[in-house]
Image (cartoon, rainbow, N blue to C red; front, side, top):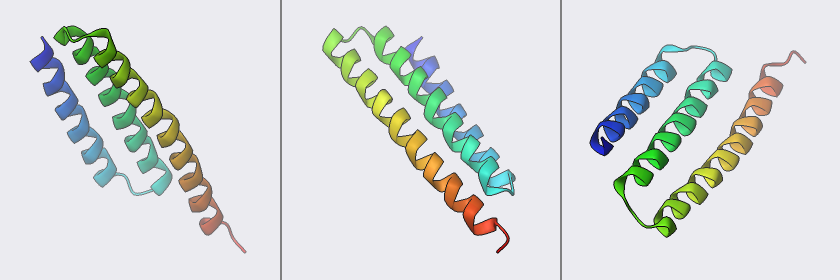
Length: 90
């Protein structure tokens, strides 16, 4: 079960990379990055919980996932604002 979840994590990351390469507009590419953050993080957390590790290990993965989501959202927001400002007519 855990190996299957981790395989889905890898496939999800490849799907996000393919979408990133295919989309032309930079703001659309940010959605691919966010998709990878959320899905891979949630699936990894689920795999860690199913692996049978201690509660401390699962909490560490959950805290890491929360930090990635908050940090990723802040970076995506700043990047999106920079893209919009550069593309705005002067």
